Image (cartoon, rainbow, N blue to C red):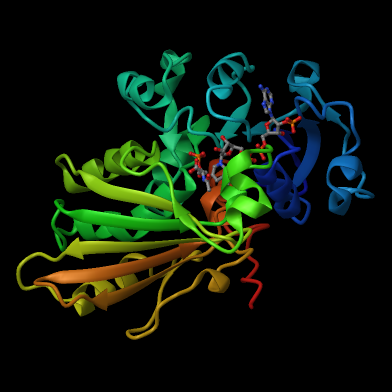
Length: 350
Ligand SMILES: NC(=O)C1=CN([C@@H]2O[C@H](COP(=O)(O)OP(=O)(O)OC[C@H]3O[C@@H](n4cnc5c(N)ncnc54)[C@H](OP(=O)(O)O)[C@@H]3O)[C@@H](O)[C@H]2O)C=CC1
Ligand SMILES: CC(=O)N[C@@H](CCC(=O)OP(=O)(O)O)C(=O)O
């Protein structure tokens, strides 16, 4: 384990956004980390307390533009920038810097697939080969060795943690998986958008990206690795009127002779000893409030009335296990620190 008396000097690119603020909330109580640089685009030049009053009076550096960061004063960088802005920035960083990227820029391993879903050429294809997909519990060895970690999307995290072990063990069929997922509005970031106005979001909820959300190929890429053959999922995200939280209701077909109790037992065995992923007892279905503010994923398993059907319910906090918490977890693994350091809090219930 690394010596925690030598602090890791970290920078956060995109510190004026929601995941940037969440990284700070977690890193400020991390004993092995010091904050060396914080960046913003439009809000560059401002002190942190002006952008986020709850992060004022903490001695944090002011927000600067990315081009004004002194990279030689840093050991690791978190990139919390919009898609499409990160590939060139990471490619231009000194190679001794470790990187945890919260955007989708390095998640899809095939540049053609990236172009199809993100609408432009991959701008750092050479670097892509050095990247590990940071779903920590299921790729710990990859994360440990990587210089650059692609932190998974929030929807993929909520879906892959229950599905991948079941596919690996051939307990469910790769065909016909339906992922019906719901997210809090902070998942859309802090940027002002009409769809995220209080009047558009409150007192109702809606599906979006129906049939074509860019998390579909990310989910299928990782499920293909688990199943050893192509997997096509039906994935529909929904926006619900809450600030944070994500719940995925996943419909699967079990292999012949398998029961929902078998699925629960397999997931319980797979995640035994894991600090952040848990399976609820039979008859208990997890809710977003059980993980709010924490780095936990809770999974419930229920038999369905359809032939060989089962329903998985998976909950995370989109800003924590779905983004910044998992990013800190990956940093801990990359640097040989205790994996739960700084992120061991339990949920804020209710
Ligand atoms: N929100 C969530 O739950 C999750 C988000 N993610 C991903 O994490 C990343 C950050 O998300 P989030 O924090 O929600 O986003 P926000 O919109 O809240 O924040 C974006 C940040 O990037 C900065 N920025 C915007 N444009 C540029 C640019 N062209 N060059 C440099 N900096 C720029 C912004 O600065 P300024 O404020 O000055 O404009 C701000 O600091 C995204 O890729 C997102 O998809 C992943 C999982 C979950
Ligand atoms: C509610 C909402 O808008 N959510 C975002 C997902 C945020 C996230 O996890 O993912 P990325 O890093 O891939 O953007 C969306 O659907 O685009």
